[in-house]
Length: 150
Image (cartoon, rainbow, N blue to C red; front, side, top):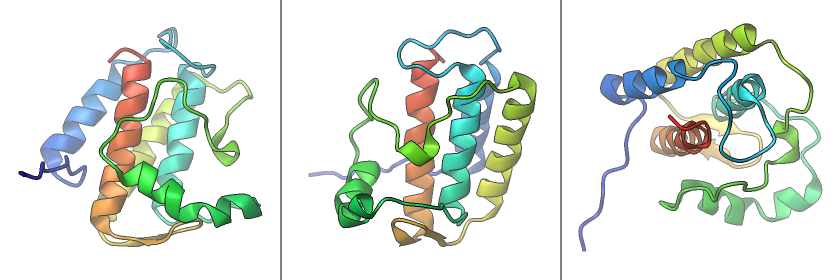
C-alpha cells in the first residue's frame, strides 16, 4: 500500500497556494455552512495557528484533557473535517470583528507560523513535530477555504 505525502505548509509552493486562496475571501464572501462570517473565520484561524505555534490556551476543560489522544488523532488523520463540525469552545468567535484587521492578523500569523519550522508545544497535545504542526494547519485551512468556496 502506497503512502501519500501530505502537503507541507513549510514548502514555499504550498504556503503561497494557501495564501493565494485565502486572499480570495472578501468581507461579503458567504460561507457554505457554519455560523461564522469571513472576519470571524479569519480570527478563528489565527487563534488555531497561534496554538500550534506554542501559544498557551487558558482554561482548557478537564474532559478535553482526558480525550486529548483521540482529539489529536482526529486532527492529524487524513480524513477532512466534516462540514459543520463542532468548534472547540476556546476557538469559537461569536463577536463581530473588523474584516480588514482580522485578515491582516491572519496573514501575519500564517507568516510567523511558516517561519517557525521546528517543533512547538501545544497546550492540549504537548510537543508537536514540524510535520504534525504543518498538517494540522494545512488540514484546518483547507476546511475553512472549502467552507468559503475557495
